[in-house]
Length: 411
Image (cartoon, rainbow, N blue to C red; front, side, top):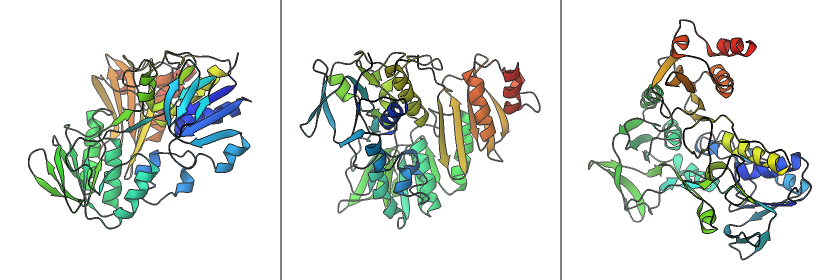
């Protein structure tokens, strides 16, 4: 029997998509969306890029206007889920309210990992995760001179590019030896290193932060792990995220770097699903359970759960893909490159139009494309249907991913 009363906790991309897809699929029962941020659900990726640059406003971030939720009978509550009573099929909220459910979808996402540093509480120290974070940062960007960024991942480098474009002197500290090392190959890291340095960003690799120093409660600089002092009107950290899985753990659900789900995205309780940044799942594109922080994963998992709830269950096997915009560079990634042992390059780093094909044991597992959108679209199709492309084929003079995709599709 299809569940009539569906409760969703988490008002981000994944939670919103469940509610919207349920109505689109014809679900006529009750849908309740609980989120701990005021206002309607909104897009997060532009916060560290276009929003801070003033290219888009807050209204443009909204998935839908407020009236959409009334028209589609989606109840929205600004509250936080405090506990799950699985036996009674209730969720207790921080306000003291309790909500019943036939099926519960946990889409609580993740939060910034806050560095354990002296001075982290000072005014002028920020993470970038929510609209409130971006709104607090935006007015400061007009007047700051010196910015220190801790972490050269996607968020840290996106913000570094924005701050440099706004005229600040930007210093990035990264404990690893190349930027975005967990997500991309060495050739692509080298391209982004060169690009950021050309924009005036100082990339300090192999170096961390010892403490944040301040005066009168405000950050004025940082002390690096090797003892240097760097001036800073603003300190921004981006050292990864922590899945918001505590409520699931307290309810007795299986948790291991996120809420563990099966191929149908069900938790260890079949009346509870988990999706998006908080879910740990098995993928045909990875050798171990993974947790993905991407818009694609949030949307696709939401749609997969809705299909199951509407009586069309199918294993979740979507190809992962990601993107980041930094300055004039748009990096698009298809697949997961972890464990690759060989790369083939198409285009050139000098022109800043490059695709890196990542192989493991002779099999294509990921393609990273910067400013080559046709390569990205072709690689998603190639990887999704099971690639037969070999490194030697890709290295042939004149090889093009788009032409290869078309030829193998016809075959």
